[in-house]
Length: 175
Image 1 (cartoon, rainbow, N blue to C red):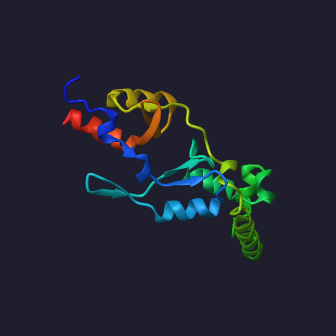
Image 2: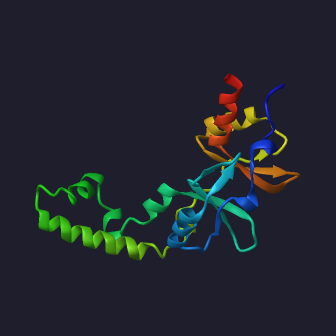
Image 3: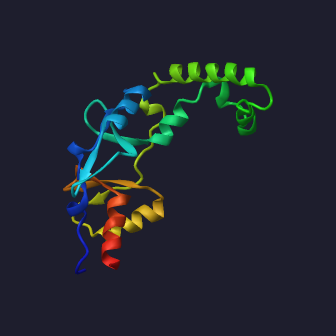
């Protein structure tokens, strides 16, 4: 397939992608995401996900920013229906109640920040080979509804491919 790159040409080497251990806290994950930058072709971006490794350096999953936010939800709200949670912040009902609720929520978030990342991480559903064409990544990402896939070379983890980089290649094919 002329003009179509191989995954190895657009992947981010695993050593350059932000990661944490599975026993790291949500607070640690937040620090990692906030302090990380990924540079591809002189363009810098903030990661939307971080990789999660176990104690023996085996990739066990990933965690997205929204997984961290979900994991920080205070215990007293988790079991409540969504409409109840939304009503807690309706200032028109009672401005004082809203302030009390806000303080309670912030306190709950701070207590949840010590949870391990393993509580909210997701497993990878697929891997891709470094010598595969970018077209295979497009198929995998669309069919699995994922934006990050680990890249293997000879069965060894060598990097990750992101949907933003795959999309960039797709756009290049069309221009």
